[in-house]
Image 1 (cartoon, helix red, strand yellow):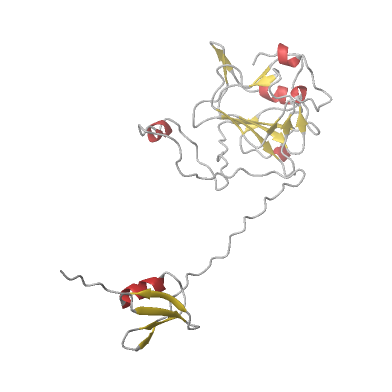
Image 2 (cartoon, helix red, strand yellow; image 1 turned 120 degrees about the horizontal axis):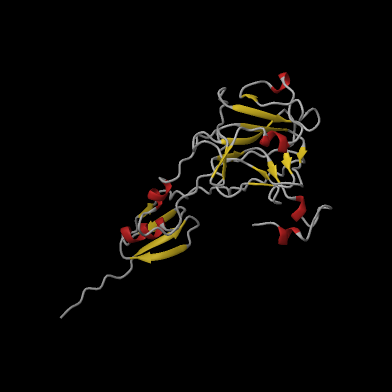
Length: 266
């Protein structure tokens, strides 16, 4: 019995003439050359020298440097931007779409803010603790210029001026607006609870927002202490563009009150 053995007789040389590898066929040699970008010559048994074509090296993409985070300037209002992330949660029963369908979101602008349009059939109360006067101020139809009226001085008076009804413990008002002036800090009464009433519906919500052309958003500095909060069945409310802070629960605040943790219903 005879066995035919094919010995390597194809020599692959580099562009500098150095032997790279030996092969049994030109196809095998070219396959080897394609794995190592560069120029090669193939020496065959009959002495013929075949110059291989260039093997194109893949382009090297420069690394993408992440953009440095933009540090907000003091007093700068940073708009909310919505980022869509790919689904990465465990959902074996495909319930996500069903759950999302139970939430109804109002239209939003390009920065992710809910679009709020004034309704002249509803009321607005402007609050300016510098120019306001609680004894003179009244609610006016939405869309009325704040320059043409006397604003409220305190948030308490503006909220209590809203038309409201109390049914089974739910304080209901309607799709009215209370707008706080920019660059100002508002506190509420320390003598009684200041309740935020409910709006009318999902599409007709009560709004606490801002107005003016200042730099800083208005701030409610005792939000959550017990004197202003979203009580019990309060619903259909939008708080937009207003900083909510509780100076009584901030250890760094001179108004920090240790007892608040034990006296306020959470």
